[in-house]
Length: 143
Image (cartoon, rainbow, N blue to C red; front, side, top):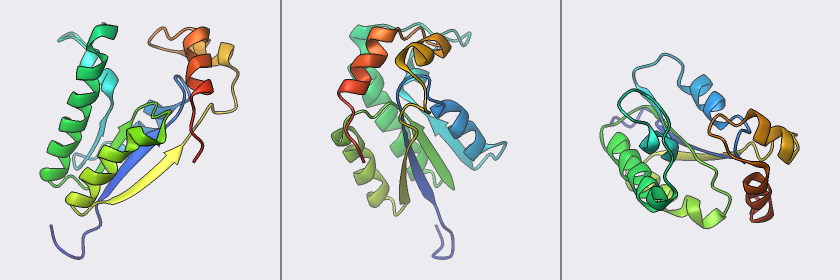
């Protein structure tokens, strides 16, 4: 990586269905040198179907961290990680990985996109219900 090149690790926080994936897609666009990653990718089968298993959540988060480190080690210009990150400590491993590879780290919060828990649950592509959105909101650490 040359000194002139700027590389970014963008960490996108937000409650379920707040627009994290859409935001990541906008940042990455069609560039082959930009990539977006989230723990939900772990739950997609070979056909692209989302098959969530709560017993594998810890493995999904570890996979996401490892995938992020792999992308940074390969020198992608921009790596966007878009997870809920409701607790600040959940960001720490990514901050460390970004620093280790010389990436400028940007943390952005979409929080709830101005929507109620019911509205977020209604638009959730992964079937997150109102109760779970409410739990995410309750444990949210502010920036």
